[in-house]
Amino acid sequence: MNSSASIFNLQRPMKFHLELTDKCNAACPMCGRTQEGNRCLPDMSKVKNIELDLDLIKRNFTPAICAKISEIDLCGGLGDPPAARECLEICDYFIGFDIKIILSSNGGLRSAAWWRNLGERFRGTESIVEFHIDGLKDTNHLYRVNTRFEKIMQNAEAYLGTGAIGEWHFIPFEHNQHQIEEALERSREMGFSNFRVIDTIRFGKENRFSYQMPDGTVRDLHPADPSFTGVASSGGENSRDASRSGAIEVVDSVQCKSELQNRPYIVATGAVSACCWIEGSDDERRMYSRSGVSHSTEHNIRNRPLEEILLEEPYRTIYPQAWEAGSNPVCIRKCAKMQRSKRRAL
Ligand SMILES: C[S@@+](CC[C@H](N)C(=O)[O-])C[C@H]1O[C@@H](n2cnc3c(N)ncnc32)[C@H](O)[C@@H]1O
Ligand code: SF4
Ligand code: SF4
Image (cartoon, rainbow, N blue to C red; front, side, top):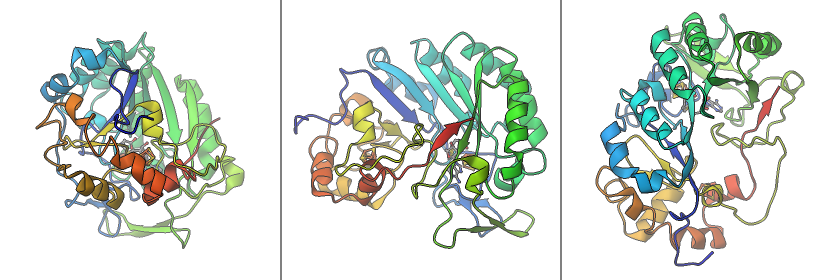
């Protein structure tokens, strides 16, 4: 790479990862928004109840940028995309540029009519909804706390009934591992095009995760038995950017996934980041303090144009130097040692 050029290249084909909002109806205990030890209430030091609206999107995703974008992940770290007021309008805007949308959701918010509407927009395109449903009627809410399985099924049926593409993503735990086969069957009956199992590696050293349900009951999450899932843990984390291959790759030097895919990340506050792994980390804070640029104000699409932000430090020399020096632990874990979750289609 030319050391003075940005790791992001606006002339090349691009992808984006957007957190449309940090609002969510659910309270998954291992999610960054959740206080697992306090009735799964949202952690208000992180959650701002904020969203990216259509005006802001249009201002930054100009027709020139959109012409370069092949794919946008509507996912994020703290929220559920359908919780964004203008989610449908934003999808319309991107679909108008033939951009493939991958929308990840717990499926529990909004009405069946809303999901039918989304399906009508996605039908006939490559766009897809990933429904993250970790179990059946008696188990899904044990991880997807505060959601109702029957409502999720109605929403998914309404969406799939339009002919749009949907996938069922399932995180196995000890409490739902025996339901993988039945959920797979059900996904086929309903018309999901794929059923994927995602390993989670957020258990820590004790290999279990304690949390308090909203009613005060204390529960433990335990890893699934690999014999049920066929997925061996890699010791990494985060399913959004999970490796889809299933193979554990080990390389010596950092191969930045975001640079390779030309895929920046933008969170609901409007702050631009290199990826969802580094966003909010000490590594990122260090990169920004070396760049002399304020992450929250100057590299925020509410204040400055995206096209300028992506071409400035720390994305020019500071990131590549840190990779060379091996000084970003997150980058080493994720993009040298490849400690990422894995997804496997059944
Ligand atoms: C924070 S969520 C945001 C999108 C949406 N709310 C959802 O849950 O799909 C981002 C991703 O994290 C995944 N996720 C949640 N809990 C996880 C866990 N314990 N391990 C791995 N991935 C997890 C979700 O399934 C989703 O793919
Ligand atoms: S549905 Fe997604 S954003 Fe909401 S709590 Fe669960 S993982 Fe977090
Ligand atoms: S973890 Fe570091 S190297 Fe990997 S994609 Fe993110 S910024 Fe790039």
